[in-house]
Picture 1 (cartoon, rainbow, N blue to C red):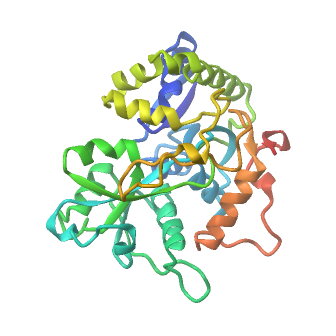
Picture 2 (spheres, rainbow, N blue to C red; picture 1 turned 120 degrees about the vertical axis):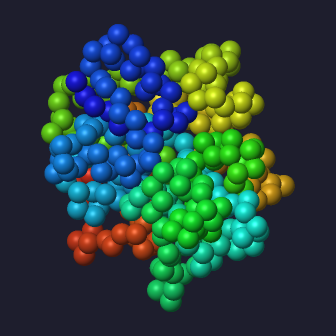
Length: 342
């Protein structure tokens, strides 16, 4: 049986449906990772007490790639999951001390909350700094004070200055996951930073990466994605209803999100940039990101060369990675050449 790590968010819906099937009950065990990709990177480590906690991770693309680029050899990329961007909301508090943060530009020099070192929340903060021009003479992001607040609840407490230990100016998290806390008045959105690459990728422990068990799982996951994201099921509301039932989101928010997200093999056409409605958007407004320019023809068993190259190049420029003198070898990131696609 494969232990599959996942983040308990709406992106995981096809995976949850597979796990609930008769085949899923017999062959996979879902392991919730509420702290996100950083937690999954830890759970994949075989040397931890009690051994490796998960065999497979459905996690954020940039963090998985960064882990391997920094020397992790205990896992490898085996496929793709979501080919649209993740819209990272930039979030601050509603405490009076947070009033000085009204837009992203006001955050320069402020401590940034992250879930774990190496997580997507840390990596994208560096990308945000580069986009904002908060760079040194070499073009690298200025030194950012990161505070590891671990849980989503602690991150929210941090921007509201609940304790000195947690206190931060902002943190970054997926837009719709955070939106209920904006609606309740607990936190505020002051902008967003979408990933320029497909947002979710599948990794596996090197012990199972070439196994028939994993191959079967990936094939069945693609089938469930195809059913969940079938245009007819999106149009008739069944996909929306599933998310509303399992994640307690409002229908209008789910429908807005579903209109923009695209899983791998999703037959719906991408939204074009002219469809995004961003002309009059204010900081904190939802603006659906345009589709990435790479990784749009992948499936659960392939990874795009373009995605790997774009992530590595961007994170090198952001100061997250240092390119080896001989350059990157893409075969270090995948179990075989067959996994790579253009």
